[in-house]
Image (cartoon, rainbow over all chains, first blue to last red; front, side, top):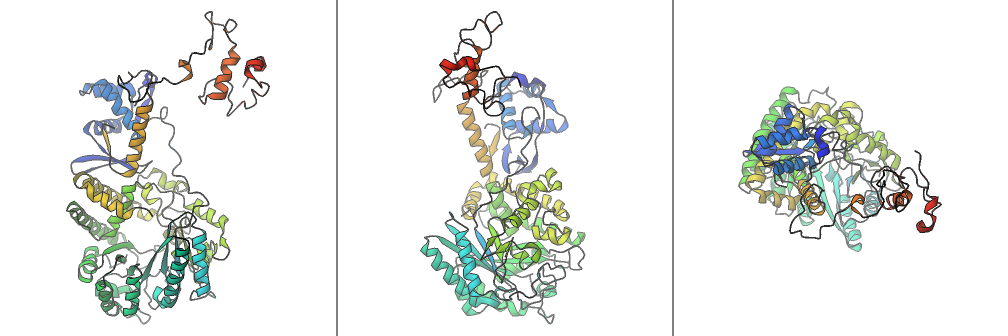
Length: 488
Length: 114
């Protein structure tokens, strides 16, 4: 850390950061890097001071000396804050870089989401694939993926993932289990291919659980296939919108099957994925039911994707309820973590996992980068949510990725291309939010999801405070979590 | 770092980078560590003893023990530092094209008028 006399005229101001407190300790989250530092009192005081007014190097040193710091220590403190860009000046520190750079064009694939069917045996009223805001155009296209298309997809994944030791396939629908026969064949084929190359592969699937059988449950457990169940909670909430084609609730059908699924010992977690809608906002009651009564390992929640005009959408009041319950459950997550126990609220676990690494995202997710969706016809798309949508076809498994279209998709979706994100401290994690949500809401995958900004910032702040508290009081817990979330 | 404590992996990387810089680079105003872990070798062209750099005792370039162009040539080829000399990287890539062997051809190195 150096000092230079020529800095006399330079004015310092606070860099782009978010300050937060946890466990009686001050922290900063540095937006240009995604880094988190704990501050001592002197560093906190400097940021406070610069929050009130810009100061020159000498003024700042003099002020610190006036507060009892040795001159060399004051210089060192300023040097440290300058180095991490906690404080900046246009003269000394060059203008911040435009943002995280895009991954290279030949970024190797890591995962495919195979939509093995676009058919579903339910008629959930809020469905993004079949509901009012659908973008899929499945007319005249295959309803079920064939074995040829599936093996071509596996070959495509292995060819496009050069250099990766492990790849992943997620099975999706429609209702995935309506094509279980193919799923089983794909697992077998992919394992053979991977073994020949000396590589590894993981599998997971999402299902509505209506078609689970003893045989399927055994197969999923024996093959270490991760299971995510889409469901909305106890009977009254599940049956509100997750209904069959005659409008009948589905809880009574899935409950016994879920109990069997969850009773079967297995290596991979079983997760519930809850869609929050108008009237389905009792986050804690849903969590208790799914985690404690049914026995899911983890439960994740997301507000329904919609154009903003649907009756099932969460209104501001619904969202306020959800946020309040999220915060209560997050406090509980922290209590567990401080005791060294794992809590199943995956919205916190996921964010904490990203905070451990210090994620600084160029794009909100891996869609179109390390991950692609495959429709039953073999068309490629950025992810499963764009399956069968002619607007977003990115090529075909037989002919490869349409690089021009992918470039356009990624250029739009880059956080630096989203004007509103440039002044938001939460952008390293959010990067503007889901491409699909943005397309449904604003007609452009590159539009920031402005309807969530306040909520995302609140939530990120909550998770940062949890992170800070755990790092101060039970840092080993974060190390264990990091090992579990380590990128493969 | 003394006043900031890294608590995630990204912060740890920044901290490591900072400590590497601290150990490697000592500014002129700083007192070198009395017991350095590695030899303390001052860096930078202004510390290297190339006689005649810039001006002679009278303030001109005529009496330098070697021509100013010869000194500039050192900066041009070996140094990235943005000083006011011909710049191999950005502005004057051909400046030394007539100077095959510096000891013989230094007279061919001409002034640059940007």
